Each structure stands twice: as structure tokens, then as C-alpha cells.
Image (cartoon, rainbow, N blue to C red; front, side, top):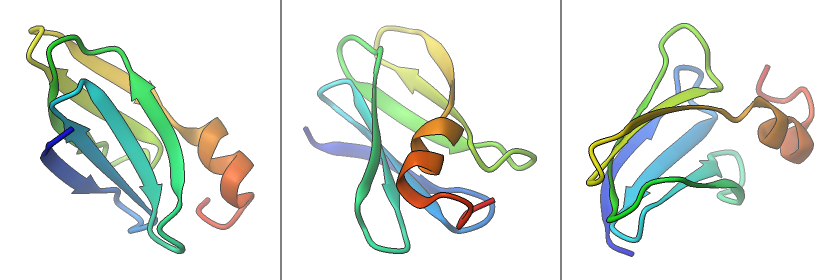
Length: 85
């Protein structure tokens, strides 16, 4: 889907994208590889925002009127180990 928003986390290790297909994708900035696909918004995701106090907590909003909070620490740990802690 078309990317509606992007944000980089506080330690510059992860990038999140919101797209019109409803998916929120998290990418590792070290190598550009996907870390997680977060599904939960109907009718498109339109905003992503990383927490300033927790580099793994991500807030998203969608066209469905819902705001969601995600914790990507397990997915990031599987991909990178202690690299981004």
C-alpha cells in the first residue's frame, strides 16, 4: 500500500511506516531489513509515532478511528539480539 507516515525511533535503530492497506511495518535501519508487520487497522493506517521513553513502543492510528500501542521488543530482539538495546 501507499505509505502515509514514517517515524524513526529514539535510538535511530528502527523505522516504522503506516500504509493505506492497514499494515504498519517496522524496518531495521542497520540493514534495511523488515523486523515486523503489525496488522490491526481496517481501512488503512495513517500515523505512526515512537515513544520517546521506550525505543520499542509504537503508537499507531488508523482510518478505523482506533489508536493502538505496540511493543516490538521481541521481534527486534529476534532480528538483532542486543544490538539496539
